[in-house]
Image (tube, rainbow, N blue to C red):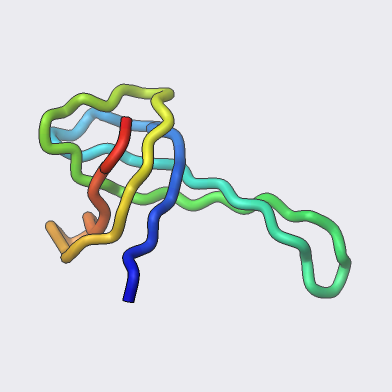
Length: 76
């Protein structure tokens, strides 16, 4: 099974080796037939603390690193 890859914006880099990513997606509502924007925050592992607020990054699924971290940054 392939791993999911998401793209989003870094909204917090205060923790050590952890960043919070805001991923937004648009989809067509099944009943109202209008496009709806939803967003979700993910915590991702950043080994070298390279990502800063406002950076657009890609994250990929991984095995659980901590209670909430299940994603790793692959591109800055």
